[in-house]
Image 1 (cartoon, one colour):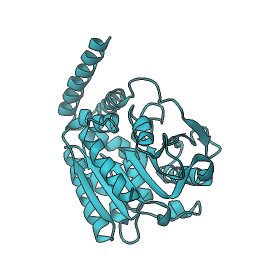
Image 2: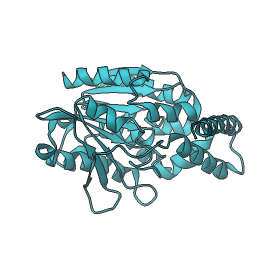
Image 3: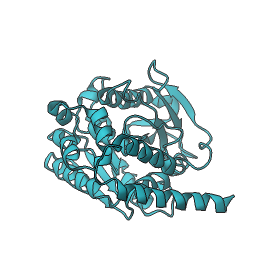
Image 4: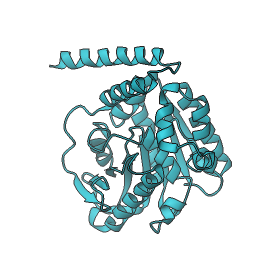
Length: 313
């Protein structure tokens, strides 16, 4: 059984490399090619094994997708810090059940933190603006239940992968989403965007991979003003969340976008750290999410050290 999983993983990696190499130039089959890319990305990023036990599900809105799972810290008394994870999926797919990664829900409670993973409404039924609102609403629901859950409401970090990286960066740079639920940047200790590539939407539409253009068009439309408004890099003037850890693998557009976001955040007064790690293409993009929380994986060590500094533990 183990051997079959390894073969499947290798085959998926080879297929992903072939697709990446063959999709540089858009053509008449661009939409079909993007759907193939999405299926490969979803398969490569999927969890292996069941969801970590011990979670509690909370609904923070009326839509069935407005829900979250929360795990309490292990063997720690008193209010503890909270890490809130936002899954990826091109703003149109994915869920807390298949895109959180297999290690996070065990690792962070073991480090003495509460951990939550949220679902949110998806494009095209809900626009990106509502997705960012959902992130803020989920945080508000956790704060509302902070005493019961043993959470320190003043020590909350947002973490997100891919499209989720964009959403947490957006909530961390445009305070309107937190303000809409009665919160502010004072309620967020820091933000960890993981391997996003749409922090500057107009730049990504101009220079990003052709295979992703249909996804960007669906999520951000064609209005330049709206694209700019939904770009964390272009909204990073003061104020912002106080601290950011930008994680990325060696995808050229992701590296370029993360460095530009980091520079804009530093200019806006936030403390910014970068974590640049090996990995290329879809395989690297999926691996950094899937393995984060694995104690033997270098990004886990980097995140753990950063969280201790931000939470002052």
